[in-house]
Structure formats: C-alpha cells, structure tokens
Amino acid sequence: EAIADVAKLMMNMVHQMLQQLRSDVLDKLGLSAALNDLLGSWQQRNAGINAVLQISGEIDDLGEHVAITVFRIIQECLTNVTRHASASRVMLKILREDRALSILVEDDGHGFNPQIETEGFGLAGMRERVEELRGKIFLDSASGEGTRVRVNFLITAVQ
Image (cartoon, rainbow, N blue to C red):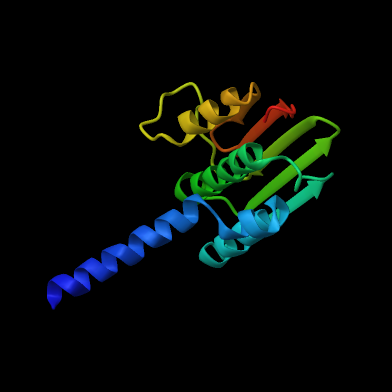
C-alpha cells in the first residue's frame, strides 16, 4: 500500500511537470491565452512580485514551433526571476510587426554578470531555441541593475 501511494504521488509529480512543459491552454486557446495563464499561475506563486504582460500585434497565428519556443522562453525567464533575481517587478513585452517578433523580459532584481558561465541549463536552452529559429538573444544585466532579456527573430513560412 505504501509503494502504491508513493507511485501515485510520483505519477502526479510527473504529470505536473509535463503540464508545465506543454500547456494545454497553448494547444487549445493559443499563445496569448497560454502566456496569460502562465503569468497568472506564476503570480500566485510569487505574490510579492508585480508582473505585467503586454502583447502588441497578433501572436496566435505563429505556428506550433514558434509558439512553443516563445512560451518556453517566457517560462524560463520567469523561472530565473523566481530563483535568482530577488525582484519586485517584472515586465514582459511581446511585439509582432509583420514577420518580426520581439520578446523583452525585464526585471528590477539584483542582476548578474552574463559573462560568467552558469551551471544551469536555462540560458543555454533559451539560446539554442532562439538560434534554431535563426534569431538573436541579448542579455543585459549588471549587479544591482536588474536583468533584460531581449529576443528578436523573423517569422518565416517554414516555422
């Protein structure tokens, strides 16, 4: 019985992890709704941080691969704010103009030195995702000055 309880608990944990990796809302309602849902649940866990999401332009027609990439980049940025920034404010902006898409995530936390290699996989994973879409990622951070992550790429018919 104890083994069955532990197995059930582990199954629930794996299910929750998979939910975080791939949002049902993303599949059913689109990227805008998925990002609003992600930010809402993040805000519940991080009530002391004021978070704002601004979306300009249409982002629900980006295609599955681009939408998942944008979702995961935002998700990783929010995770980094929670784990490392000690921020009181985070601003997320997504701008779509024709085929150009830009993402800006900015916090007022304590910042870090982006030249120093980190042990985690978060920033490296974001870079790989952005490069896969032939985009560019820019990190701007300094001790005591917060962090800005900016991502730019063009949306092509292949994506």
